[in-house]
Amino acid sequence: MKDIFNWPIRVYYEDTDVGGVVYYANYLKFYERARTEMLRAMGFEQDELISSESVIFAVRSVKVDYLKPARFNELLDISACLSLVNAASLTFEQSVTRNDELLSTATIRIACLDSNTLRPRHIPDDLKQAIVHE
Image 1: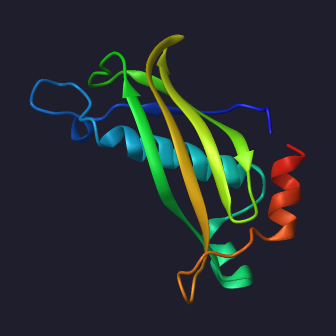
Image 2: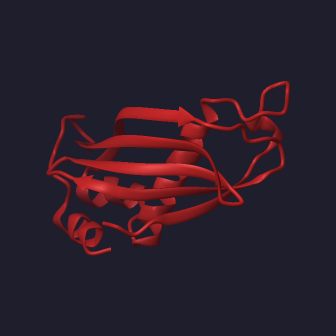
Image 3: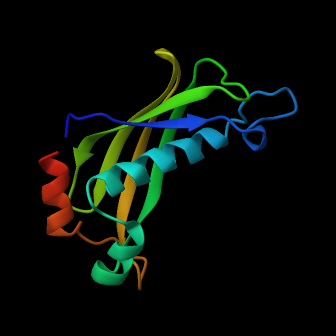
């Protein structure tokens, strides 16, 4: 659980406001992409988890700090690191950096839900084992 996953993202015009600065809500999209790519790198596709395990993941809570602005056309590095695994939730520590300069940090708690009832459920054993042993 100590491994840090990194995913590069280019800032597109659509990510920015009129001043060319990344709009604050778009950081959440960047964080989401990094978590999705982290699962994919571990061999888990979210659409397959829905069909085979009836599992979806939903954001339960978010705490974001915006430290410095990112701008149009910059290459950013989005990190994701699991800090806590519970029976039915995952907590990630994430960050956005530009050339090792810290721009934003986030703590994001993800709930594991049954895709049919949208009620909390235990994380599937194979996924939990893969996460814990990464």
